[in-house]
Image (cartoon, rainbow, N blue to C red; front, side, top):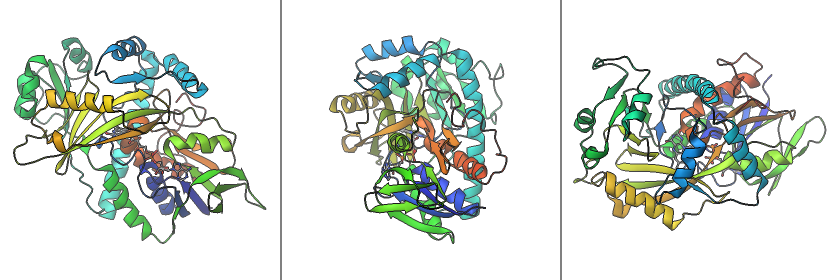
Length: 422
Ligand SMILES: Cc1cc2nc3c(=O)[nH]c(=O)nc-3n(C[C@H](O)[C@H](O)[C@H](O)COP(=O)(O)OP(=O)(O)OC[C@H]3O[C@@H](n4cnc5c(N)ncnc54)[C@H](O)[C@@H]3O)c2cc1C
């Protein structure tokens, strides 16, 4: 029987968890130290990237990573630290850099992606959410190296694809015809793959839209603004309680959805979550009358950089920095991002007015989130969404609600559960 649940963290993962749990019959309290979606869900890339879910850990990545570290504007930075968590995570990451592991995880995440798409679409249809800049403009992944393009398009049918094919391989001329903003890159491109059913939206606005519906939900008890300090054994019948700065919260169940901070809170309950912060950057540039923004969202595969139009703004997101739990904006990395954007897509937006942002992706070594029961009675997990938290949020929240109801889940949780090879 659903009872009282406290969801810790009001990012996109916590808010969707709260919604699906309220729908499943739980009385839900949401707790956050800084309000709604002020963490990594604030200004991420905005891609709902259901088809591009392959984790970073793959064969050849450790060698590639060494090359990236040497590049001036490379996508990767690593500051070795006297931090056991960093070294443990790196060792686990390297152990998963195998083609077979990558393929298995990609298959699981692709199923999760399709489930997440279906859950978000059902939510949008049923709740008539306030606008959050959702669009389905498709996604164009461009490649600079012919061999990489050939490898990526190996699964697509040979020969010219029909115009309505969901995924198509495009030559450079087709890329430019669809995206004139790529003109400056023309001589350096090998082509691209266009997926017409990929979407973009403003993650922060989505969180506010869903919060609006949640506040009106008959089983929503409210958003508590307080900092959780740690779990402790509950008094009386309660198995667990949560100590916060302002006092103690009790509930029949707790859901940990606090992004990268989940590590510390889980540790207070004796759990070591295999999470590490992968810091990334975004720019948010206004699109003016003279600009040529991308029509689709564009991913530059080799640069590991994405451009997406979100309403009247251009969002550029990139970079993976292993520098610990440090959200500060490094001026050198910001300069790199601006340099690349100005050089590659000079006409896409007003870079002089671009607002920079940095956030911490809560990443597991293998790239799959952890969803479901924890070994601590009364404590449930929805953590570790890494680079795809917006994409997967509705899917993992609906699976969590099913698991907490003791029902068989729509997708098997085997690759996502605590203790799985995430
Ligand atoms: C540069 C960049 C680009 C990205 N692009 C995309 C993209 O295009 N598509 C996509 O799907 N994903 C993308 N992501 C990933 C996505 O943003 C994350 O996976 C997602 O935001 C994680 O959501 P979350 O709710 O788990 O964490 P968060 O959004 O960080 O939320 C955690 C919440 O917990 C709260 N909290 C923490 N500690 C405590 C405490 N002690 N007490 C109370 N509250 C606490 C915080 O205040 C915060 O609100 C990107 C990430 C980055 C950095």
